[in-house]
Image (cartoon, rainbow, N blue to C red; front, side):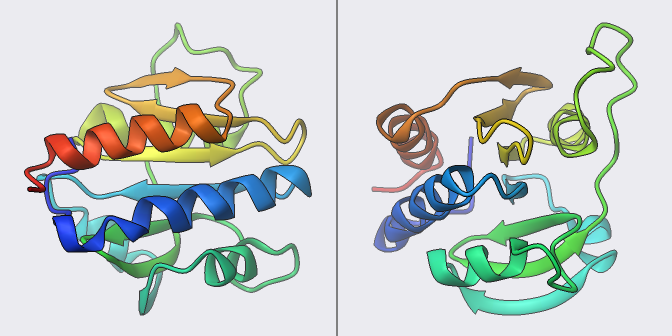
Length: 159
């Protein structure tokens, strides 16, 4: 559940979906974490403070190869990008395939330790996945990604 999001900021979902699709089309890797009820302060502190509204263009720029912030995760708290280039914990679950890259393993790791939800774009395949509750759900298209994020958003207490 994305517990800290509020109804007036539902545009956040649309901006993240648009960015994920843009990045996937260009096969640019990305890791976007939505903070839930469990604060991600230690992970935020590992990155670079941003403090900006969630915009697809900003996410595209952050993850563009060569950007100083493209490695690591973006963390969204409420309706703001609070930090980029954040270091997340890698899953230590032996059942998780070692063929998965660092972004995917970090997304799973964070969702094992918190109620965050992560959107991952593979730079190798352009595939969009979502990590939730320690599991990686693959092959998201625009409709499926928007539906999942909106459902989590609604469940998070948005009216």
